[in-house]
Image (tube, rainbow, N blue to C red; front, side, top):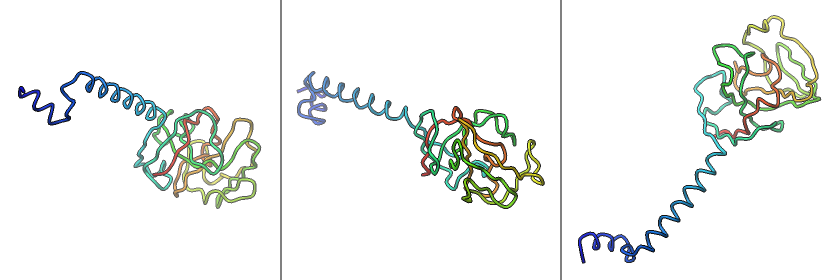
Length: 175
């Protein structure tokens, strides 16, 4: 036996046969394909921005366009209404609390959706809205969703209004 043959034999008794390497190659290709397909449907995100966080800086996002049901977290691509140094297209993770047809009341001390409190007091001035005059009541239109963060000082729909269905990037899970 040669040195190469002895080394291969120490890996596995059949490592010197071409069929062994063919099986290893096929299994590796199948495993790589399955793993890359699975990972193409998910993204892991981290945020150290207090305005973006929802209680956990790490999130797993299952990619998919379309709305996320109320009560669940969603990754959304923000638009130019947000401001505060965030570029349009930046992903935020927020909790969906309102869907088309819901009645939203934003007041200085709390925010209600269909009579249920979903967020606390307002405290962030925005270019679009002065915190001294934040009170407004409206019904979410077709394709509109209301999202809030779970931290104080969270930039969310209370400040920049409803998100559109096409802004949803996927459902998020806090890690």
